[in-house]
Image (cartoon, rainbow, N blue to C red; front, side):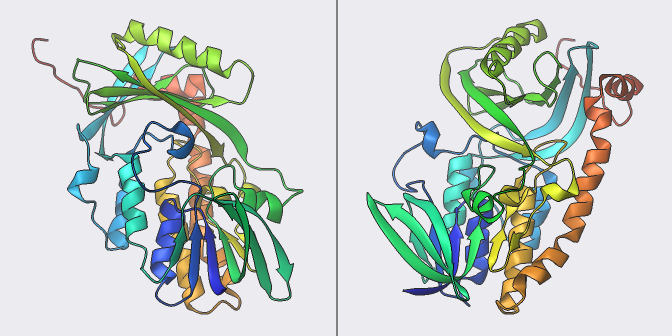
Length: 361
C-alpha cells in the first residue's frame, strides 16, 4: 500500500501529528505498545513519566482546541511546588498549576482521536528504512513477521532513544542523556505537593516526588553511570530526613531523558524524514518537561505538511525557531537552578515564593 506519511511512535507527538494530517493524507502509524487491555504493570510497555501536565502543555492543548476528559485526571490536583535543596537545607514553596494525569490513559485518549482512515498498527517495531528515488521504504515487524511499506514522508516520533534519528544522523552525537528511575510507593499521609529535590550527591539534575491516587511517585533524573541505582537508593534514604515515609513499593520503571545543551542538539530531520518532540531533541533542559514540545513540534510539522510535502522540512525547520530560542533561554536559566551557590542565593531571597500554612502549626 502506498502511504503519504508514516509515523513511528504514537506518543503525544506522533498521535497529534497523525490526527492533524490524517484527513488530508494517507497515513500509517506504528507503535511498539499494545494499546489494548491492561498493561499498566508492564514497565517495558508503559511510559515512565510523572504524569503532570504543566502550564506550557496546557496552553498547547488550548491552542489545539482540546480539553482533557475527567477520567484521565487523578487526585490530587496540584497547585504547589515544594522545592528542597538538601545541600543548603533550604526549602521554599512556589505556586504553579499542574493537571495530575494517568499517563497511560492520556496516551490512549490521544490515540483514540486519530481519524479512522489512518492505519494504526500497535505492537509493531520499527526496524529501519531505505531510500528509493523520492520515497522511503519503511521496514517494521509485527507478530513475528517483517513488513515493508513505501511512504513519501517518514516521521520519527520515537522519543529519547529514537532509532529514526540514529539512522538519519549516524555520525551525530545525541544530546546529553540521563536515565529516569521512578518507583511508586503506597502512602497514607496526604502530600499535596509536587516536590523537587536538589542534591549533587544524587544527581546534577533533579529528583522529585509526586502524589497520585494513594501512591507517592519517587523519581530522579540520573546521569548514565554504573552507580545510578545506588544514587537512587541514596535519594530514598534521604527522604526520611524530610519526613517522607515510604510504604510498599508497587511499581518500578525507567526511561532515558535527553537534556539539550546547545542548539546543535536539535535536529528536525533530513530530506523527506522529520523528527518530532524528544526525538528531535526538543525538551526542557531545566525541568525535563516534554509534553509541550511534543505538541508544539507536531503542530508545526503538520502545518508544514498541509502546505504540501514538497519543501515541508524547510518550512518546519523555520517554524521551530522560537522553540530553539525557548530551549536556549532555559539553558541560560539552568545555572540558577543547578549551580549550588546560585540556587542557594535564589532560594534564600525567597523571591516569588509563598508561605504555606498547615493546620495545627
